[in-house]
Image (cartoon, rainbow, N blue to C red; front, side, top):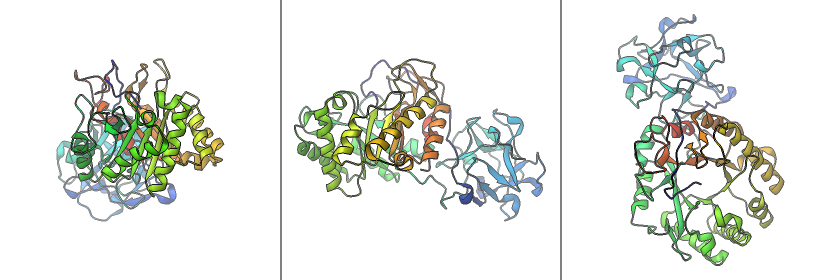
Length: 452
């Protein structure tokens, strides 16, 4: 996925938060929305008139505090919608009850970090002045992570967090620069899984982090320990753009399978990612070696999820590896494309991503004789947040477009390169920030809304 070596990369933009609420109408969940001091989101006076203020109040079990989280992104009470007054996106714009219009000021996302976000404004539902007194007005405000922006809302799966935690696993890279602390990201966004990059060859058929750091005992193992302590896990990624690839260094499928197995055993893994780029993708012998090795790994590790990540053009990926895998009897848990580096600024990267994803769907249908639904559920998208190597800007709205597509089709994997980049630039090393105006972890918050 991307470029682990510090090239002169300018990086891209995003401004806050997550995608679409996904309970279907039949699954829409109704109940209280609790926040600061354990109090409830409340319609003042239980009045259903348009413009009635929404406030904080002691929980009392009345209909004024029964909110339905719907599949269309609305949050409703008394038959009307939670609404931002005047379609405003400004800090301090008040929340009210209003007839449902389908407008963007009535769309909300409940994230795994317990934020309720209005995607249009990129702002959080907020208790004014952090005041827990009954009657305090609710407003939108720039997301800060404060207790006055944390809410527990009903969810269609009976919980309050996305139901597909493994599917969303941003790439995290320890190779150089200032890698972020995964605990910070988890606390801010609720995302607990990370794709840890990259396992490479040390010049022989021996797996090491970046081809030079030992599998155990170093910073990478510390990261694994930290992520697991936070209730998540890691998906080691083999390959990437640069460095010596195990797939090329190992001389046979058996040796390559043994190398993969060393990493699986070292960490007791639940999933691996094979990021096939550069020589590893263009060489047919290496492709076949990789396919055969993965067949062995899957046979020897029941339940292990195997993801393959490949590049793509605007109309979809080259189908050579997919066709080779299908004809060899290899099925994987997700074929993920990297829909960027198409070339040129000013393109709508969200639309180009979904266009490329449709090409991937067709490739999987043709190779494996899947239905549309089967193909979608065997797919993943591995984007790049910010300005790409080819000066394309992947924006927050692009991530929302990708999220909506993933939700609609129930994709198996939704990730991006990288968590390291999900920060504004302050003079750090290349590939350690987005290069655009954003708050920390804005891109991650978007994909945190994915429920599978």
